[in-house]
Length: 498
Image (cartoon, rainbow, N blue to C red; front, side):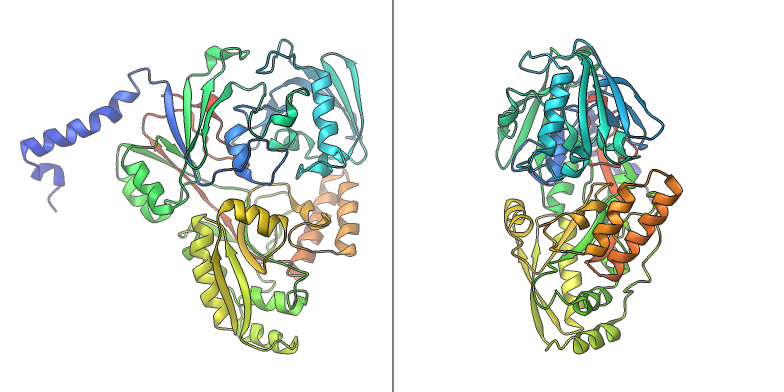
């Protein structure tokens, strides 16, 4: 086969070389700006005030910082805390804070800011989705301006990890109420501009304690939800980095182009078909099991994840501590699904709403799942909704029957015990089990209980558990410092450069 480059005429070859020139010159030019793309635009920029992971993708480690930092390999390192100690019972944590740290508005970071932030996270009126983490703190002592001692009700082996998540950001008390639109943190970047519907621009903060280590002066974060548009933007050179890009179908195209680098990494996310457990007939476990059994997870991975993902049988990702493979529970069995619907007294065709947010895996997955459900007598009426509509209507008002969504947080199993959560699942048995898990410090015993919890929510078919997604990052070849993997959804700009 003739290689294309040998068949080019001189003008064509020269044109190809010239078209590559801007790309190749970036690394050597001292370029200090970058365009990074994201799938979804958040409704605000305070990660303690909303459920959307897109908030943390913009702000975590960029605008706001936490006591600890979660790295790509899941290791934990100091960030605003410079060190810590813990008592043998795993209940009392003493954090030494970094001195000389300032917030963007010039206020000092100290133990008072930590106390304010964590008490805010546990307050009765908080909207922090990880309220349980902060409610478990029974005392916050400030032994001096740079030392804070946290006493927990229950031992928490995941505490350092949770303190590195977006919901554990340290905020400045005077400005905290305005963080949704005018975020004030201690991070290396400040909000320069937010053009709603288009992009957020972050600019390097010269007052940062280690400003010289931050190589990018300005970063534009563009919002591109459509999968085809994501690929087109990368190919056109309009975007420099796209983590978690929907490029599975175009992977060979990017891998074969020297202008790009491709990184494929795992996740701790769980993509599910959520069901409203209080709406008839979904309040009948037999109907929920029938829906789960109507779905071929492997085909969903192909259709929704472009072949990138691992089927799951419960709300837990392979590789997580205490994971058990439960894909055999409510496994694909259309005939049994039909029988369960009949047993539950359901008259088919059964019409249910299927609300789909504007992410490619949901829209593509909706087509696949609707076709599967139709074969057992369930008509899933697909309704495409924008992200703000999904957050208010589905997540907030619970106005839905079915929806497809990926829960990206690695430590969110406690959602099954949250009263009023959008699944509308209430189980005293699960609540008792979850309380035992939280009170257990021994790792082996805790993992055994976590296995029991996985089995319980699988048997109850709270959701139809679909797959653990595999994330793809596509970036221009000159971008340095990209993580190989990341257990939480974050775009850490402090590590990036040309």
